[in-house]
Length: 220
Ligand SMILES: *Cc1c(COP(=O)(O)O)cnc(C)c1O
Image 1 (spheres, rainbow, N blue to C red):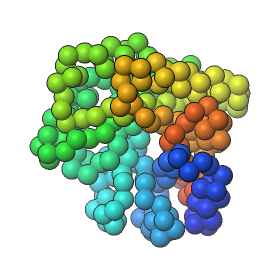
Image 2: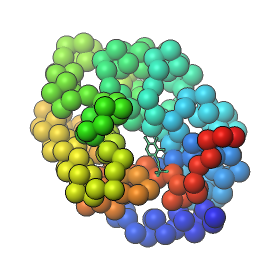
Image 3: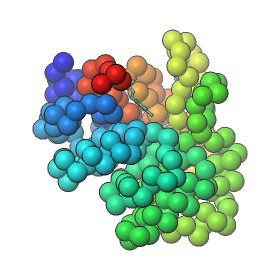
Image 4: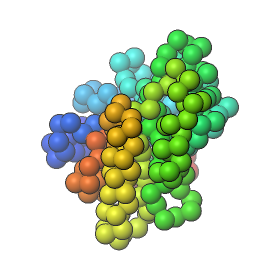
């Protein structure tokens, strides 16, 4: 597994204005350093504890993205350094992020996770809930967070047409929300198996793990 080669392959096959988030969950710092030395600066993790440990060990010019489901009681551990939180799916969580960001005198960028998959297991808000949230007074009073886009995860299936429909749903949801919220600029969708399709459907940020670092082993 040549991490540098993998990164080069992906970077040369995507448009320049699409951000590549290197999803490094479960991988050792030595693997992340290989990616770092190849020029990668944006890393995604799905567990706060693991992200904090890696943040402490790695160079400080890295942008850390939290891509997993966030528990409110753990926001405080990443509030000092996290660059973008992809999986925000409630006003309650947003309030906690705002509170912790304020303690560090920061504004934390967030994406609203929209439920686009048919599967019940996937987190996220409906387009209507997202719209209501963005127009609520409570939201307008949160000065230490900024909603900069949306994130979605397609159904785990080999049915390309279904994945395409779900990505398109996220893109149209983004377009609608953007009319009232011009600050929105990011559509985070697409992983190792489907990032080309995601880009064709309007993705501006892809989250790629195994294509860079190889298959994950959750047993160690
Ligand atoms: C693990 C993960 C990815 C990356 O998955 P790969 O298939 O390895 O590219 C992307 N997004 C989220 C939210 C993840 O948890």
